[in-house]
Length: 503
Image (cartoon, rainbow, N blue to C red; front, top):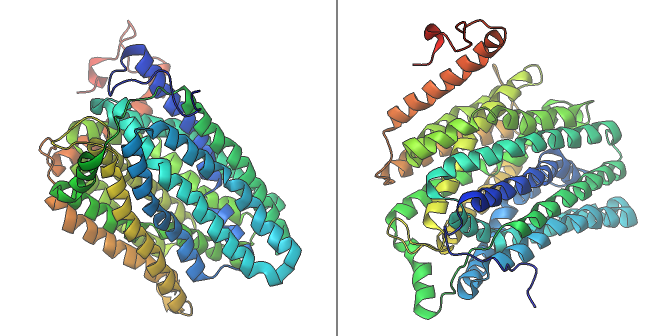
């Protein structure tokens, strides 16, 4: 009997073409439309408020940001199992269903401990919350590499940048309302010092998100399987040692590791920072909505018009120049958080939106580079396989783990820092973390990216001109659209006039 994760329509890499390929890619996009709801509702203020209600310390928030990276060490056994058995799709389904369903005990177990033991059980409940989050992340780590290899064999190389940019654009239509809705619920029903009420409403958000997360994985049942021949003996070992012998891959992994070390802890601490800036430890009216709007909705909305530009730049200019431009741009973004105060809270929206646009460039470029190394077919002189994705994940995980723990320990050590600095107001441990992140981001770009080799890539200056030209043309077209709708800017036959045609 065939298991749920296996398919009777298994194909060889890139054997799927024409309408069936377009349907499969559309199905993958539809799945993430629902998956983005799960991700948005389980990010930002809901988990932060859940941990705060359980009395989590600054160091525990650092641990919380490090848990995904600690769990990522499970990519090694997960990928070995995929390569040895060829059951990539089946392992993906088992692991990802486990990951999404883990949000049920995450929502209920710490709440149950607190309700039965009261304040005396907060420490146990907080530790249980961290442990369950870790188990949830283990599911992603064990089977998540299957998605990368699967997509590498499904999506043709020449359109990956554009395709995954469009996929992310569609997901923003669901993730933005989900992020705002989670903040609205907490502000209207849980704006209280009563930990019981706050935990209950955070749990409701987690349970609702779990439904959409499971639906995301269910839709993949309609995505055709791609044959991955099992690797045995020496072939299996060669596929695992190859990434460590590929210098270009190691330079790329060095950049992503250094960048993740600098960026990964900022999600938790930026949320804490904004909640504190809004007053009384995040209990001010509207604080959850404002935080969700600033940290999730604003960057997501800002990405929407730029994702297509990033995708085209990746396909036409190359991935290395995109990484350089976006990576350098994120350096002043980290510094910008230092100037966000309660009186200048509007600046947080600007910094967050700019950071979202630039991080999208880094994220999509990284994903496309990993896809090039992965998959079943040989590309760029490699033997392919998910071992590349797993090796990258493990290297990045070490950096992310130490980044979260280091920033958490630094925050705990400097928790009493309170200086008065012009333009910044009170200078606290948050500002130290932001400045440290900015310096590390800059070092990651200037140390590792110059050594990356991408023969087809265009010069960074040319990529910058290409992107600015696209941004200008898109803005010009958007501004002219209302005039064209009323007939201004068109010839008598309805065509654009010569003076208004793009060059």
